[in-house]
Amino acid sequence: MSATQAVNKPVVHLFSGFLGVGKTTALKSLMAQKSPHEKWVILVNEFGEIGIDGAVLADNGIPVAEIAGGCLCCVAGPQMAAQVQRLLRENAPDRILIEASGLAHAASVIDELKDPPLGDLLRIGAVFTVVDPRQFVDDSFAQQMLYRDQVSVADVLVASKTDLCDEATLVAFRQRAAALFPPKARVVEVHNAQLEIAWLDLPVVAQRRYRLPNLPSLDLGYQSQGYTFDAGRNFDGEKLTQFFNELPQLTEGLVRAKGVFQVLGTWVWLNWVDGQWGANQIAWRRDSRFELIAHAFDVDAIAERLQAALEK
Image 1 (cartoon, helix red, strand yellow):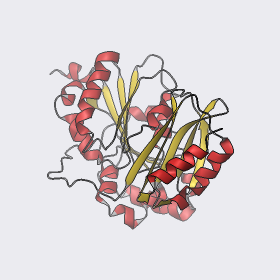
Image 2 (cartoon, helix red, strand yellow):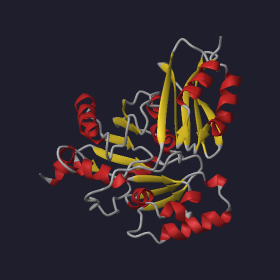
Image 3 (cartoon, rainbow, N blue to C red):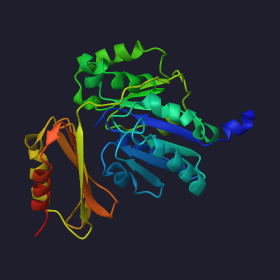
């Protein structure tokens, strides 16, 4: 293959990071800056069976595909090649942005992108890993193979949620990030996962010999469950608020809860992480859906609380 052919391949960017660090918000910030002269497609992978992030991103004309029900590095891996080839065939994009599940081994995803058939069709651009500095400086996270894997593959290390960090945490983050080897193309500190589109064209500097032979299957003890509701049903805003406030008491080890809901004829994205939740309006109109990830919960009890939050 000639150098010209390689340059003309569509560029694929992987967005990695642990649960709730702001990967979807980061993608939305880039989508808002996209040049009308470039064609993009988005591929979203979710650990649970119900896709929420795809619904959040599908609001500005950029084609979005979803792979739910497992991580790209293992259970859902075989679907990635088929979905990417379909996106290439139907859209002929200049860039593909892939949001990996927060529980995915990013190195294995890149291996899949490098191997045939995808390696013959794409070139890998800058890889982004979004981190919460409070987790990054916590040794209990740093010692996890999954977390180290996500950080190691990054060309651009993005520290989000910096407004929630004290100065000592940020100083420790900067020291640890500066000591990473190989050095990153860029280490950035942002508010609310807002990225600059120019960072997509930063050089690829991370090692690309990622393959991990005999990688053990990932089992961190998490369970997920998704729920869907017809688009014709409205939710009561106050009851939804109460439901999200009470989620930690309804679950054991809750790490993530998110959903898109129709409330008073509008559609909102509700997102719970780190003991806090927020709401944003979105353009999704297909159905209401909710998903949570925790160590344990009563599936039927959660369903009953959601039913109770519907308007009568």
